[in-house]
Image (cartoon, rainbow, N blue to C red):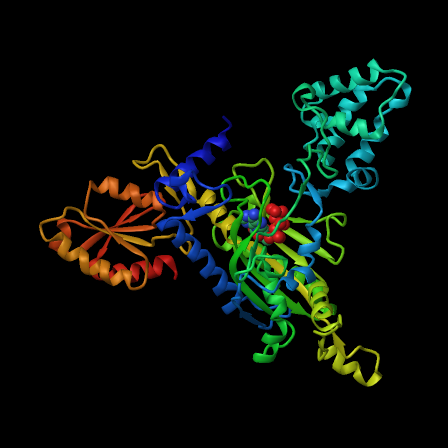
Length: 546
Ligand code: ATP
């Protein structure tokens, strides 16, 4: 078992044992892709959402020009008029038989696979330059060289790259076995994607990463339900797969009911549902999860500046909450990956222990005016139905000259984050193991995220100690999540708090009765201080900076 798999198993076990995360409906065998957060998990998740709401909606950093800008929130219904999902492209876009790549998550329409491979696959294009099937033999050293160099970069999940010797032997036996019938491009593709021919038969590769594609399925990303008694096409509704559309369809409501002006943002935190074909990697890819999304509306002329602003703000936000920068990777999408309406997109990725490559935590996308135009057209018959006046300084100055358009449909920058993915990242980042400690496993959460901020322990449940401890606990719990525990040995109580990631524990002992001081134990280095019992709350405030 690799070290990272072992670490992941330990983390999953700790999360279960200590009540961070349970499988949903476990007593009935569970249900794939759904998870429940226990008493510690729910506090951690709430802290993440509170930090996001506070740092992005109530108190965002100043904008690129150093000025403050407006951010407001909404909380929209999960089920909306199905026309929303038609206009957004979610209904039509997922109605065709799709094949999913488990390697990179890419979906390919079954009927377009070979066309896409032929015209739009970088790795195949490159491979065909070193492949010479028409000669009736293959140049194995050249192919091996390709697999170990260009192949690794262009098609990391292709069988020829992962296991070149075995894959090449299948290919060679095909080419040499039928010298008069050289393989077609389609066959070449299938052979280089196949590692165990006898077991799996020929595989079809993903045009992007080369991994064998899954079977075709009429892919319905969205969960369906019905409103009312009659269950027919007319009553069909969808559980939202993202919170963003609720924001777009309320754009005008927000503008009309508040005093916000472009540039401004609307944020929303809420549940989203995706009928993922292969939920995996613990909570990383779930079928029910929570989004924290901002749609930031700006003047098209300034949209790239705002895009860069939000990308940087969001990266710094993760760092400010304890995610180490060397584990974070902002990956700018290549032009071939971008949606047709998008000018730029950065995936903020994190190096989870379960994967060899960093995985997406959040996407920051420049969406142009695609969404507002689509909803304008579908609901009001006009793409520019949600246009706003251009009262930027630049435009005001040039109005006289009559050279600037007076109105525009705002461009949108969308930082879209997953609460559950960040929760998982915070858990894996916090997980620490030190065999020299009495409690080797401990969770080094950033104080803002720690589910429990402090614990109060009477050393023994007698000799007047509980009577001193109880009021300290009552005082602290009014401001911070705090636990009181008078049972078991003090070492065991510290160990429990270490596993929960509690930064500080206050212990009342016999000396407290003599000089009024208590012990404060620090989670990270197990060091101990003594402070006056009246200073516990202030000590916490100072140390946590909250
Ligand atoms: P992926 O490529 O990993 O499927 P995505 O690009 O489809 O993600 P978005 O639609 O951009 O994701 O959603 C924004 C964020 O929502 C993601 O960065 C991720 O944090 C979270 N997210 C998306 N799908 C899931 C899921 N199935 N389970 C948990 N979180 C998710």
